[in-house]
Length: 172
Image 1 (cartoon, rainbow, N blue to C red):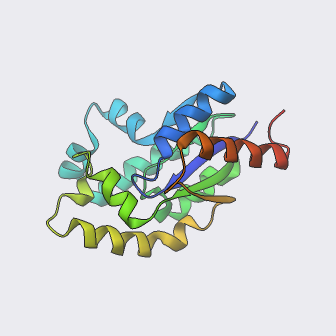
Image 2: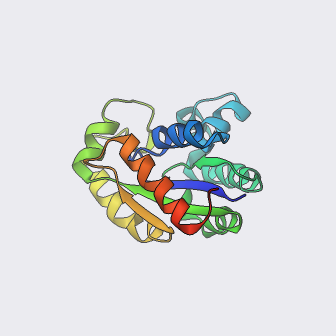
């Protein structure tokens, strides 16, 4: 049974949709950022502060290598995980890749609620989000399915994913 892998920019709804999919499909849910925090006993911002982005990406890659070997899991990845081809390749081996997107305005509104986004601790946050989303767009386009979550309820997004998986013959 293939994994269902959720990719996308921070705030696109990966964790929320992943938890709903997990319940609906009765499959285990793994949020790679939460797994990294649990395995290292530190929050992502602390790891970023201690190791820098490159060090964090190395940790993230090891975590992705590990979870990609699972079967039938719902995996929510960190927003920057797609920046390393090795991550995408590992996740694709036994996974269906689904990218969740949202407009920059929706992302800005969603991420402003939380302070645990180390890349966004900067005065030009909104401009930076626009720039980063544009830079990462080609990386997210590698997915089997791309869904915009901007004006959609998470349960609607989940239903669309399940419909797609049924059409592909991935669900019984």
